[in-house]
Amino acid sequence: MVKTKWIDLAMRLADAAAKTSQDQFVRVGAAVLRQDGSVCGIGYNGYPPGFELTKQESWDRDYRRDFMVHAETNALAYSRPGEPHLLAVTYPPCKACVLEAVRYGVKYIAYRENKDRDIFPSDYLATRLGVTLIVEK
Image (cartoon, rainbow, N blue to C red; front, top):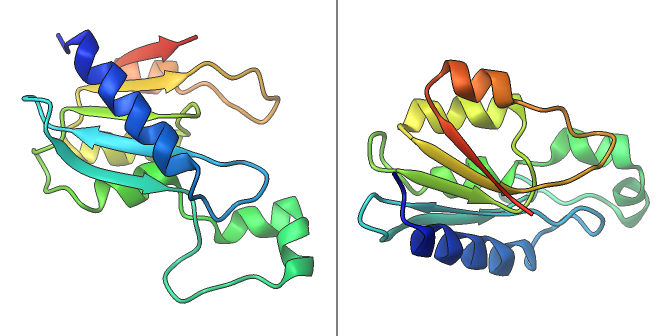
């Protein structure tokens, strides 16, 4: 089981990271903690290093999303496989991010509930892969 205080800490760190997002419309932050509550990594959704969209391109949601690296991926990049225990994210994780988290050894994923029409639940995937989802309301 993961301690409530670690979930709270990770969500606060994810909130802080989201504020630095390069996506002006959907700001997502993520934090990765080890089992002892120490921080492995923090990330936000943004473009690959050295890449920028023009102002006009950034207004096209579908175009912009093709270039966006997810916050979970950016946070996990600071971890070594087997090190992460908890991944907290300010938005529900997509299927690819759940798979990436499992690949790194994450056991718990905490995220904020979101009713956005573009969010596709990955509950069945996480459950099948042995990851416990914690939905923060």
